[in-house]
Length: 108
Image 1 (cartoon, one colour):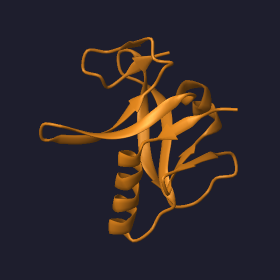
Image 2 (cartoon, rainbow, N blue to C red):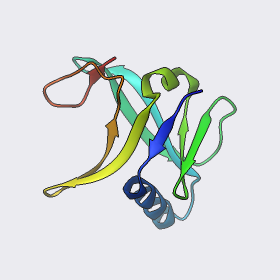
Image 3 (cartoon, rainbow, N blue to C red):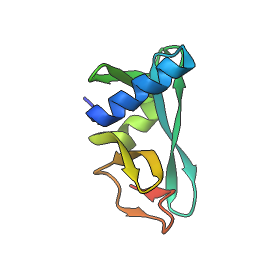
């Protein structure tokens, strides 16, 4: 069974953004072939539940993952971090073997 952990900071941000939008069930995460290294993360709002998705819930927030992304994301942690003026979701993914220089894409 696949695992995906959601940090308290990520859960708080997911809840905050959904509250601001006034709708939504959680964060939808997938991966797509992209960039110079192979894959990139794709984030969207989950406004509905798709039959084939797997739902992960922690700290009152949900993340929905398509089956084709489960192997790539298995064991990952979704975090929300602040670095200087930048704030973003970070994936601490143990499956990543290499990243491109800009950090936008990765290989597994």
